[in-house]
Length: 64
Image (tube, rainbow, N blue to C red):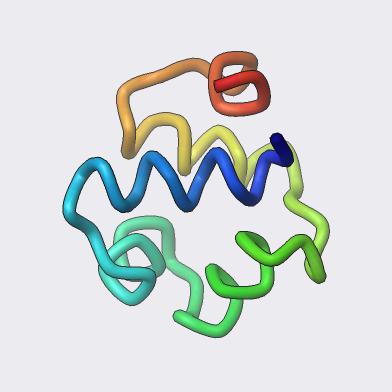
């Protein structure tokens, strides 16, 4: 499973929309969509912010 798919699964498990996740990490809904689809590369700092939102480590986010 890709990191984008992992993010999507965590987001859905937490009943969160792409827009809500984007608001929490300071990016647009479009950016979240692109990250989940794998068309935009996730930076380490942004990955860390996403991991923090879901209460996991960056490593766990990559291998969820």
